[in-house]
Length: 214
Image 1 (cartoon, helix red, strand yellow):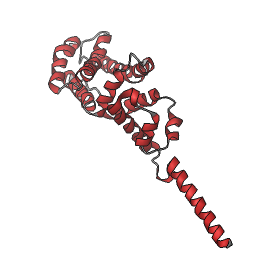
Image 2 (cartoon, helix red, strand yellow; image 1 turned 90 degrees about the vertical axis):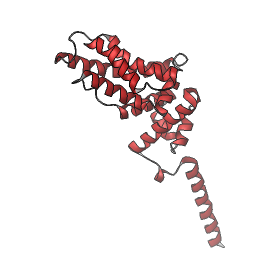
Image 3 (tube, one colour; image 1 turned 180 degrees about the vertical axis):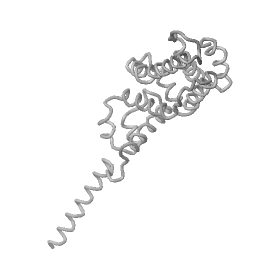
Image 4 (cartoon, helix red, strand yellow; image 1 turned 30 degrees about the vertical axis):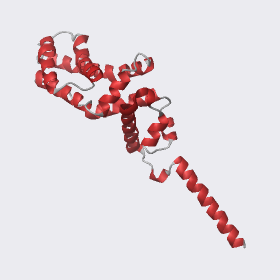
């Protein structure tokens, strides 16, 4: 009799542990470190592309990334924080350095790589966020501070170095020069629902950028 009681107690304990594991996620099978971050960011981008910023929730990201909600909330207190980190991570993966040894070729290569990155879910996610800027000032501020402005500064430094060695004209780099490439790409993504084509990029570089730099 005692053996049956002990056996039933063990089964009850095992059942509770299985239920808890299903509820919280089996830690032994969870992703960790860089793999977990990549899964979370990919889930964030795909959900943004499907339902936009307002439709995204941290719980939905956790479910799609197949991780516990605690993994999300430990790192990000708001979805603005998560969205900005996800966008910055995915954009950075696709970036190439701006090589101005040949200004025309370097600018075209840089813009092509950026627009290739925005051809899929990343572009839809970015467009969805931009459309929310007026209603979500914290999102706009974070995007400018952590995504847009650092890339403008990076381009400005590259242009200044190119000017020093005579690859482009000398002189102070006008802010418009660093604003235009991002504005060009974002306008097409936001209002036309696609990144610029290669022909459009070449035309933009030849007719707008090079005259400002030569």
